[in-house]
Length: 256
Image (cartoon, rainbow, N blue to C red; front, side, top):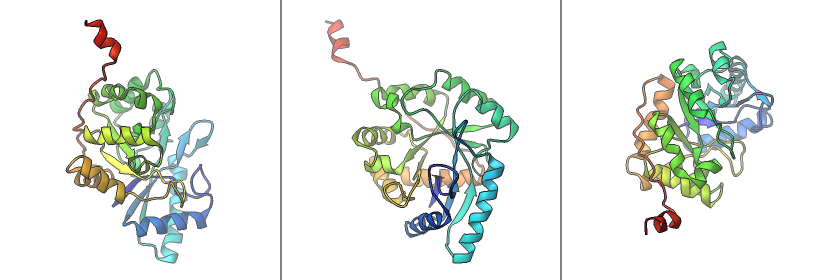
Protein backbone atom coordinates (compact mmCIF):
# COMPACT_ATOMS: atom_id res chain seq x y z
CA UNK A 1 0.00 0.00 0.00
CA UNK A 2 0.97 3.61 -0.60
CA UNK A 3 0.02 6.46 1.74
CA UNK A 4 0.01 9.70 -0.26
CA UNK A 5 -0.67 12.18 2.57
CA UNK A 6 1.35 12.24 5.80
CA UNK A 7 2.97 14.72 8.15
CA UNK A 8 5.81 12.41 9.07
CA UNK A 9 8.88 14.64 8.62
CA UNK A 10 10.26 15.73 11.98
CA UNK A 11 9.83 19.21 13.40
CA UNK A 12 8.68 21.17 10.35
CA UNK A 13 4.90 21.43 10.79
CA UNK A 14 2.15 20.22 13.13
CA UNK A 15 3.00 16.54 12.58
CA UNK A 16 5.98 14.60 13.92
CA UNK A 17 7.84 16.51 16.61
CA UNK A 18 11.28 14.90 16.16
CA UNK A 19 13.21 12.12 14.42
CA UNK A 20 12.42 9.49 17.05
CA UNK A 21 8.72 10.24 16.69
CA UNK A 22 8.95 9.97 12.90
CA UNK A 23 10.52 6.53 13.27
CA UNK A 24 7.67 5.42 15.55
CA UNK A 25 5.19 6.60 12.92
CA UNK A 26 7.07 4.72 10.21
CA UNK A 27 7.01 1.52 12.24
CA UNK A 28 3.23 1.85 12.60
CA UNK A 29 2.95 2.32 8.85
CA UNK A 30 5.12 -0.73 8.20
CA UNK A 31 3.05 -2.84 10.60
CA UNK A 32 -0.09 -1.68 8.75
CA UNK A 33 1.23 -2.96 5.43
CA UNK A 34 2.25 0.40 4.01
CA UNK A 35 5.29 0.04 1.76
CA UNK A 36 5.59 3.59 0.43
CA UNK A 37 4.83 6.97 1.98
CA UNK A 38 4.67 10.45 0.51
CA UNK A 39 5.66 13.03 3.11
CA UNK A 40 3.42 16.06 2.66
CA UNK A 41 4.28 18.78 5.18
CA UNK A 42 2.11 21.86 5.06
CA UNK A 43 2.90 24.73 2.74
CA UNK A 44 0.79 27.45 4.32
CA UNK A 45 1.98 31.01 3.77
CA UNK A 46 2.79 32.77 7.02
CA UNK A 47 2.73 29.54 9.03
CA UNK A 48 4.52 26.56 7.49
CA UNK A 49 6.38 27.59 4.35
CA UNK A 50 8.00 24.26 3.55
CA UNK A 51 9.43 24.70 0.07
CA UNK A 52 9.79 21.58 -2.06
CA UNK A 53 13.58 21.82 -2.14
CA UNK A 54 13.70 21.90 1.66
CA UNK A 55 11.29 18.97 1.90
CA UNK A 56 13.67 16.92 -0.25
CA UNK A 57 16.53 17.66 2.16
CA UNK A 58 14.46 16.51 5.14
CA UNK A 59 13.52 13.38 3.19
CA UNK A 60 17.19 12.50 2.72
CA UNK A 61 17.84 12.85 6.46
CA UNK A 62 14.93 10.55 7.25
CA UNK A 63 16.00 8.04 4.59
CA UNK A 64 19.40 7.69 6.26
CA UNK A 65 17.71 6.84 9.54
CA UNK A 66 15.37 4.36 7.80
CA UNK A 67 18.36 2.52 6.32
CA UNK A 68 20.18 2.59 9.66
CA UNK A 69 17.38 0.82 11.53
CA UNK A 70 16.10 -1.30 8.60
CA UNK A 71 12.51 -0.13 8.24
CA UNK A 72 10.98 -1.50 5.05
CA UNK A 73 9.19 1.69 3.97
CA UNK A 74 10.18 3.97 1.09
CA UNK A 75 9.56 7.68 1.48
CA UNK A 76 8.97 10.31 -1.19
CA UNK A 77 8.69 14.13 -1.14
CA UNK A 78 5.50 16.14 -1.39
CA UNK A 79 3.55 19.02 0.13
CA UNK A 80 0.03 19.78 1.27
CA UNK A 81 -0.59 23.21 -0.19
CA UNK A 82 -3.05 25.63 1.37
CA UNK A 83 -4.82 27.16 -1.63
CA UNK A 84 -4.70 30.94 -1.94
CA UNK A 85 -4.13 33.60 -4.59
CA UNK A 86 -0.35 33.11 -4.40
CA UNK A 87 -0.40 29.36 -5.09
CA UNK A 88 -0.01 29.67 -8.86
CA UNK A 89 2.99 31.99 -8.56
CA UNK A 90 4.64 29.69 -6.02
CA UNK A 91 4.02 26.70 -8.29
CA UNK A 92 5.59 28.45 -11.26
CA UNK A 93 8.58 29.48 -9.11
CA UNK A 94 9.14 25.89 -7.96
CA UNK A 95 8.54 26.52 -4.26
CA UNK A 96 5.52 24.26 -4.69
CA UNK A 97 5.71 21.08 -6.75
CA UNK A 98 3.62 17.98 -7.29
CA UNK A 99 3.84 14.86 -5.16
CA UNK A 100 7.20 13.21 -5.89
CA UNK A 101 7.71 15.99 -8.46
CA UNK A 102 4.75 14.68 -10.48
CA UNK A 103 1.91 16.73 -11.96
CA UNK A 104 -0.30 15.88 -8.96
CA UNK A 105 -0.52 18.74 -6.44
CA UNK A 106 -2.21 18.07 -3.10
CA UNK A 107 -4.24 21.14 -2.09
CA UNK A 108 -6.30 21.91 0.98
CA UNK A 109 -9.02 24.49 1.56
CA UNK A 110 -10.01 26.39 4.71
CA UNK A 111 -12.13 24.20 6.98
CA UNK A 112 -15.05 26.59 7.51
CA UNK A 113 -15.31 28.88 4.46
CA UNK A 114 -14.73 27.88 0.86
CA UNK A 115 -12.44 30.32 -0.99
CA UNK A 116 -14.53 32.46 -3.34
CA UNK A 117 -12.10 31.94 -6.21
CA UNK A 118 -11.32 28.28 -5.50
CA UNK A 119 -12.45 27.05 -8.91
CA UNK A 120 -10.54 29.81 -10.69
CA UNK A 121 -7.36 29.16 -8.72
CA UNK A 122 -7.54 25.43 -9.43
CA UNK A 123 -8.19 26.12 -13.11
CA UNK A 124 -5.07 28.32 -13.27
CA UNK A 125 -3.04 25.48 -11.76
CA UNK A 126 -4.43 23.05 -14.33
CA UNK A 127 -3.56 25.20 -17.33
CA UNK A 128 -0.05 25.50 -15.88
CA UNK A 129 0.32 21.72 -16.04
CA UNK A 130 -0.74 20.69 -12.54
CA UNK A 131 -3.46 18.19 -11.63
CA UNK A 132 -4.99 19.26 -8.30
CA UNK A 133 -5.96 16.67 -5.71
CA UNK A 134 -8.39 18.12 -3.17
CA UNK A 135 -7.41 16.91 0.30
CA UNK A 136 -10.05 15.62 2.75
CA UNK A 137 -13.18 17.32 1.28
CA UNK A 138 -15.29 15.37 3.77
CA UNK A 139 -13.88 17.51 6.60
CA UNK A 140 -14.90 20.87 5.16
CA UNK A 141 -17.90 22.38 6.93
CA UNK A 142 -19.49 23.78 3.75
CA UNK A 143 -19.47 20.38 2.03
CA UNK A 144 -20.93 18.80 5.17
CA UNK A 145 -23.77 21.33 5.17
CA UNK A 146 -24.38 21.07 1.43
CA UNK A 147 -22.68 18.07 -0.22
CA UNK A 148 -23.88 19.10 -3.69
CA UNK A 149 -21.43 22.03 -3.60
CA UNK A 150 -18.77 19.51 -4.56
CA UNK A 151 -20.44 19.04 -7.95
CA UNK A 152 -18.71 22.16 -9.32
CA UNK A 153 -15.35 20.51 -8.66
CA UNK A 154 -16.52 17.24 -10.18
CA UNK A 155 -17.46 19.09 -13.37
CA UNK A 156 -13.85 20.30 -13.61
CA UNK A 157 -12.58 16.71 -13.24
CA UNK A 158 -10.64 17.41 -10.06
CA UNK A 159 -9.42 14.49 -7.97
CA UNK A 160 -10.31 13.83 -4.34
CA UNK A 161 -8.42 12.32 -1.40
CA UNK A 162 -10.35 11.16 1.65
CA UNK A 163 -8.86 10.66 5.11
CA UNK A 164 -8.88 7.14 6.50
CA UNK A 165 -9.85 8.57 9.89
CA UNK A 166 -12.97 10.16 8.43
CA UNK A 167 -14.11 6.88 6.91
CA UNK A 168 -13.70 5.21 10.31
CA UNK A 169 -15.48 8.01 12.21
CA UNK A 170 -12.48 9.53 13.98
CA UNK A 171 -13.42 13.08 12.93
CA UNK A 172 -17.05 12.84 14.01
CA UNK A 173 -20.30 11.51 12.60
CA UNK A 174 -20.80 14.27 10.03
CA UNK A 175 -17.38 13.80 8.44
CA UNK A 176 -17.91 10.04 8.43
CA UNK A 177 -21.36 10.38 6.87
CA UNK A 178 -20.04 12.64 4.12
CA UNK A 179 -17.02 10.41 3.47
CA UNK A 180 -19.38 7.46 2.95
CA UNK A 181 -21.60 9.52 0.64
CA UNK A 182 -18.58 10.56 -1.41
CA UNK A 183 -17.36 6.97 -1.68
CA UNK A 184 -20.81 5.80 -2.78
CA UNK A 185 -20.73 8.45 -5.53
CA UNK A 186 -17.20 7.47 -6.59
CA UNK A 187 -15.90 10.84 -5.35
CA UNK A 188 -12.83 9.19 -3.88
CA UNK A 189 -9.67 8.74 -5.90
CA UNK A 190 -7.37 8.14 -2.92
CA UNK A 191 -7.63 7.16 0.73
CA UNK A 192 -4.71 8.40 2.81
CA UNK A 193 -3.96 8.69 6.50
CA UNK A 194 -3.11 12.41 6.80
CA UNK A 195 -1.04 11.07 9.69
CA UNK A 196 0.15 13.54 12.32
CA UNK A 197 0.93 11.24 15.24
CA UNK A 198 1.30 7.73 16.64
CA UNK A 199 -2.13 7.93 18.25
CA UNK A 200 -5.55 8.72 16.81
CA UNK A 201 -4.06 10.18 13.62
CA UNK A 202 -1.47 7.50 12.90
CA UNK A 203 -0.44 6.20 9.44
CA UNK A 204 -3.06 3.49 8.99
CA UNK A 205 -5.19 3.12 5.85
CA UNK A 206 -5.99 -0.57 5.35
CA UNK A 207 -9.13 -0.72 7.51
CA UNK A 208 -10.63 2.37 5.86
CA UNK A 209 -9.90 1.04 2.36
CA UNK A 210 -11.60 -2.27 3.17
CA UNK A 211 -14.57 -0.40 4.64
CA UNK A 212 -14.74 1.83 1.58
CA UNK A 213 -14.67 -1.16 -0.75
CA UNK A 214 -17.82 -2.45 0.94
CA UNK A 215 -19.54 0.87 0.22
CA UNK A 216 -18.39 1.00 -3.40
CA UNK A 217 -17.21 -2.19 -5.08
CA UNK A 218 -13.84 -1.80 -6.73
CA UNK A 219 -12.69 1.10 -4.56
CA UNK A 220 -9.76 -0.83 -3.09
CA UNK A 221 -8.38 -1.63 -6.52
CA UNK A 222 -8.93 1.93 -7.74
CA UNK A 223 -7.26 3.79 -4.87
CA UNK A 224 -4.36 1.34 -4.85
CA UNK A 225 -3.67 1.81 -8.56
CA UNK A 226 -4.18 5.58 -8.39
CA UNK A 227 -1.57 5.93 -5.64
CA UNK A 228 0.89 4.00 -7.81
CA UNK A 229 0.09 6.30 -10.73
CA UNK A 230 1.15 9.33 -8.70
CA UNK A 231 4.62 7.90 -8.17
CA UNK A 232 4.94 7.00 -11.86
CA UNK A 233 3.27 10.27 -12.94
CA UNK A 234 0.72 8.40 -15.06
CA UNK A 235 -2.71 9.79 -15.93
CA UNK A 236 -5.65 9.30 -13.57
CA UNK A 237 -9.20 9.62 -14.84
CA UNK A 238 -11.98 10.98 -12.65
CA UNK A 239 -15.17 8.89 -12.66
CA UNK A 240 -17.00 10.81 -9.94
CA UNK A 241 -20.79 11.02 -9.93
CA UNK A 242 -22.60 14.18 -8.90
CA UNK A 243 -24.35 14.37 -5.55
CA UNK A 244 -28.05 15.13 -5.77
CA UNK A 245 -29.11 18.34 -4.07
CA UNK A 246 -31.29 17.71 -1.07
CA UNK A 247 -34.73 19.27 -1.31
CA UNK A 248 -35.97 20.99 1.82
CA UNK A 249 -39.56 20.76 3.06
CA UNK A 250 -39.96 24.41 2.07
CA UNK A 251 -39.21 23.69 -1.59
CA UNK A 252 -41.87 20.98 -1.50
CA UNK A 253 -44.43 23.32 0.03
CA UNK A 254 -43.76 25.95 -2.65
CA UNK A 255 -44.98 23.52 -5.30
CA UNK A 256 -48.29 22.92 -3.50
